[in-house]
Amino acid sequence: MAVDNGHSYTGGAGGAAGVNTAGSNGAAPGGGGGGGGWERDTITITSEMTEITGTVGAGGTGGAAASGSTSSGGNGGNGAAFFYFHV
Image 1 (cartoon, rainbow, N blue to C red):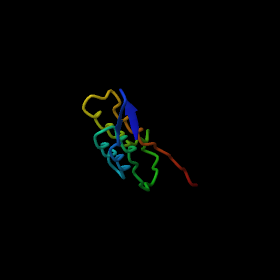
Image 2: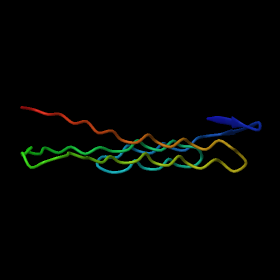
Image 3: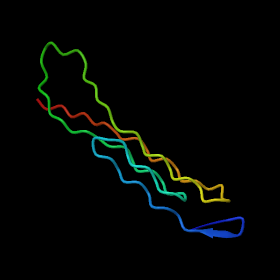
Image 4: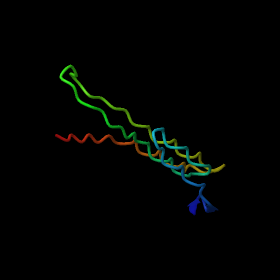
């Protein structure tokens, strides 16, 4: 619960973390966005390959502030990529 200008506001629900997608948005008023997703895959490395790339989901947008408030929710963090190499 946040207090702004002498008024109490119950915050909105935070967004869910994504799996292979962006995180979902936070609910108003002021719920934080969900974290970005990740992707898991197994590939076979060949001698012709010159680079390996990956993408991750963006964090969800924070929920809007309550009417008369200036406290909106923060955006969720972007996902992360981890590369493991086995020989």
